Image (tube, rainbow, N blue to C red; front, top):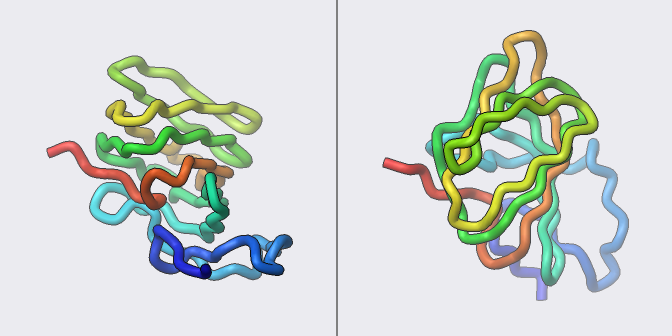
Length: 130
């Protein structure tokens, strides 16, 4: 089955096991709450992406039914998870629990590029807090 939960994502399995990230087309991963863009690949239990959030940008507070991990490759983030503020830079690993409101702000110095992983309860996008 090649159906994905995220429109525009790539499906792993059925002979597709290796992906050249820089050659994959990206998608908007935070529609309505963030300018996050990059390719997404979905397996059976997890989905991953290599995302870029532009310098000085951020995400509005949002949540999703799936937990999320973010590993920072480039740039610096100010992170708020459940009201607690922290900072993370290259090599930093961030955990966003399921159904917990969170947001990030990218340093104005450079874009933030990060690897992200979520379970497959829902797609890559979250739900903005109104």
